[in-house]
Amino acid sequence: MVATLLEIRGMKRTFRQFLAPLSAGVVTILMVLTVFYLLTLVCVLTKTWSLFSWLGLQGEGFWHGKLWTIVTYALIPATVLDALFNWIMILVLGSWLERAWSRNQMWLLCLTSTLGVGLLYILVKSSSPLFLVGTTPVVFGFVAAWGWLCGHERILFWFMWEMSVRQAAILMTIITWLAMAFGCVGPVIATIMLGGSAAGLAHIWLHLRLVGARPSRTVDSERMGRLEL
Image 1: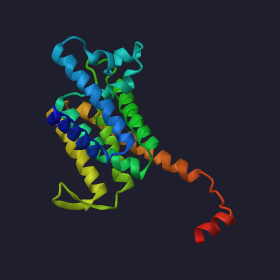
Image 2: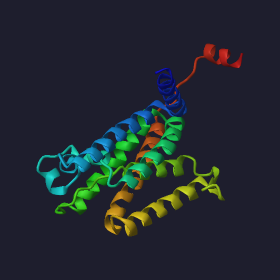
Image 3: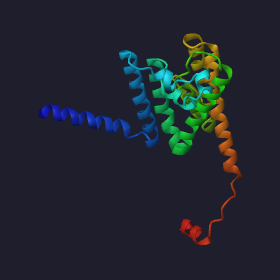
Image 4: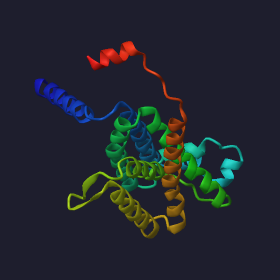
């Protein structure tokens, strides 16, 4: 009994240590995705209920009233590998984005990338009976944001080649598109998913324009004096 309690405490401690470096916004996203990933897995294994027909995005269903699916499709993984890859990418890039930007902006970027790809899908594939699912649009948006905001920094890509962040982001986007286009979903759906990058870039551009348009504030002399001291 004592050994069991110690093991449980050890697991809790390990879990807290794993989550400690993560920002609260990313933890929230990962927890929501994990719940829906597991729920999808249970539904597929038990064959009791289909989340795809309720949360997946389909042109005909959307135009007939399932408006929420333009967002909820991103909660459902296409495959186990898709779920694992997207989870890891959000874990890595999301933590950086939240610290370098802000939690609200990161969440808004998720929404923008998801909506952008969703709108593109229902316009291009309005009569398709297939459901669009997957968190890949968010990942494409995160990679685009990473490449824009840290473009000139140098990194070791895959711990082997030194290149700029912008080059690494472009290379990651190309590799991901190729893997999707010729490995699972086909070139058309892969290109639609790539719209997450365009939506992410548009979001960042608009945000920077709005920030630049804000009037500057004058700091009173008393506060400046305190800073000088």
